[in-house]
Length: 221
Image 1 (cartoon, rainbow, N blue to C red):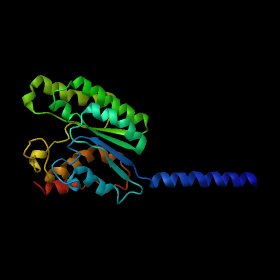
Image 2: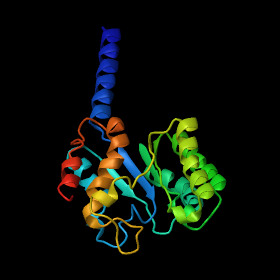
Image 3: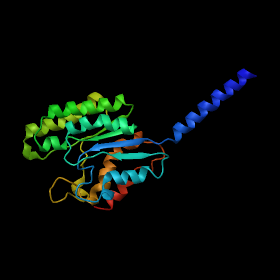
Image 4: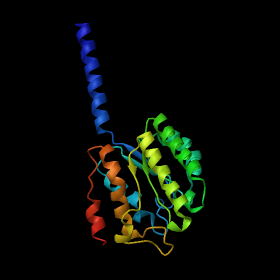
């Protein structure tokens, strides 16, 4: 009889753990630059906030931590990431960095190593890394431009990271850029979310409301 009670207790504990695990939504850390920091607009208009509005109300214990900083480089993100991982213990880390490395003409090879380090740090903490790639204007020269883009591809392929090759893909057709020619306008933020969702949706819990931001983006054409 005592043995039976022990077995029942273990089964109840395992069941409770499974239920808790299924109800627990993933927390997502966004480590980006001005593109994800909603530069030039209200924070509530940015793609990260739009993402949070779709995740948090529908998923128990869901959390989106936006640690994006305008002007951030891959080196800056790498230096800040360990503390962020320790403080928030995210399930997913979205790495949206490298654009400022390119705009400043920094070494693409050093950028790749920084991205690889952030992928490794994320995985070592138990999180799934996601990489949002960037491109730079052609006036930096074809050799530098090509080398820059290749680094994102190398990280994604070699590290097997969910990857968006160009996070700003389609922006010109969906609202365009602010006067600086670098930062998307508020009307284009739904498209940024759709681009991010192309790799985020498969690794988010079922409670996420789905990829309906495509319709929102199309409304701004």
